[in-house]
Image (cartoon, rainbow, N blue to C red):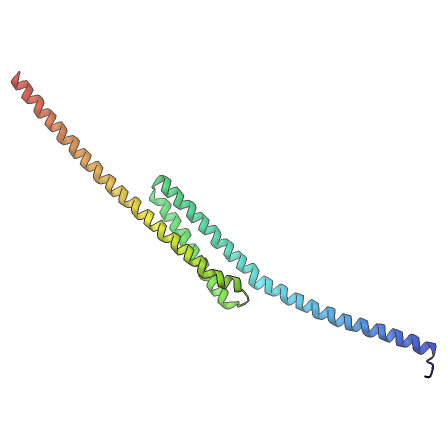
Length: 170
């Protein structure tokens, strides 16, 4: 085996180091472009998803608070406010459906959307049932009040009649 001169050995060593640095540079550039691509995906998909879900959750919570206010006060204005929040919840839900269809990477969102929608629909049905019961209660209360007034008037008329008869008899 012929011996290689010292200058060639040093040159080969530097060439190997230079080749290794070039390979590491290519790997670093590739990794950085992948990281940039992942951060764009994260920004476009996941951050927007969280924003929409947060808005949905916030409106749902506000709607529930309005329902509770209605239950304690029986003021129908609270139902109107709750209905506005429920409408917003359904708007956010539709946004999430479109978003899920647009970005198939959001598998958990696609899987959980039907469950969330079923829960929201169920709560809406219960809230409507409670509203109907309270409206019916108010109607019955009004009817009872009218009958109480009629009874009181009739009782007063009977009392006056009895008082007249007692005066005649005396």
